[in-house]
Image 1 (cartoon, rainbow, N blue to C red):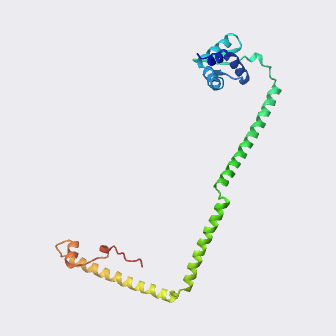
Image 2: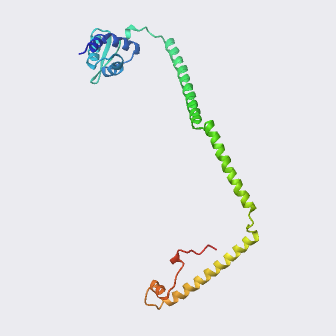
Image 3: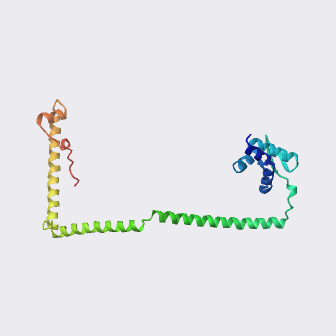
Length: 217
């Protein structure tokens, strides 16, 4: 054992006694070791030995819970607490709990505000964004100016004429397609080969061959 570890082990009973008295709650040897090991450099064996020594000396109490020993401060050394004192402590606990909840709510508000500020654009970023938007708007204004200055605008009458002609030709297309389908179906009733073979021999090309679809009426 190193000199530092030996000194820590020698002082373990005093350290553990003060800890149990200050905390005033039950702990296992593993709990005490885990809570004090980093701060005081106590080894597990030193903690177990110190706890057993303190219990034998009557300075702390020891109880068995299943297969585990629990250690806690001797309650006889503490002053008796009256009902009034307990009520006072309860009132203080309620007040402190409300204060904690209020602080937690304030923290949540500040975290939300911080997140909003962090995600917001900085002044230089905002200035750059404004310049880019101005440039984009200038481009749109130039396009609009060119459109207004153009002389090849389509009048409402010309547009309506195009729609009427489209309807006329689509109607004729639909009519002729129906006639061709009826005629080919009549021929195929007595044709010994398939429809595909008939179209290939005759040289008929369909809309489907060119992925052409008849527009809706």
